[in-house]
Image 1 (cartoon, rainbow, N blue to C red):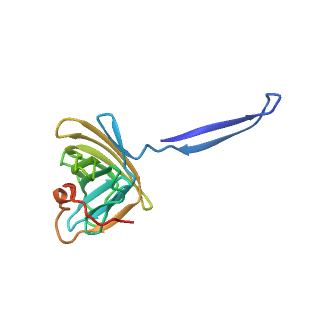
Image 2: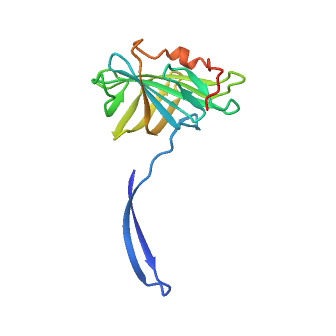
Image 3: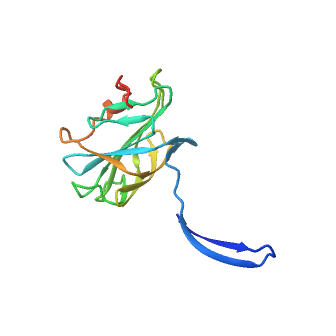
Length: 194
């Protein structure tokens, strides 16, 4: 939120010598939180389709998504996080600002989300969650997106997530939606990305 901070300076004799007011904006931490455990979200991708569906893929610094929607790992000794959500809006060219809900009656619809958290490259273990019930607030300032996300998983767990930053833009003309199951089945490419 936006906060106004008043700074007051005092001299050695404890007399007020100067004061100023400064407005500052404090942002939430870029993360996904479920079961009181937080997982970092450091970068993002937006995948547009031939319709008005957009896939938003948010990941931590250890994950890279290529333009062919292949998953790469930078450091195989560290865990990875992937949050993929599909949003539908009235504009086929741009993801619109506004509130996306799962009710399906609005122009802006939250279609669903898939989460792979605490991914271990060597064992192939990860925590998997799905959600089709939630609200996503989307804001856009210049090229910076802000997502404030609240969802409930299919198992009834509450999820909150926040992301602020640039999204790398990919266009997927070959299919209606990102092959989510293929992307999220932890079939990481064996090449190292530097």
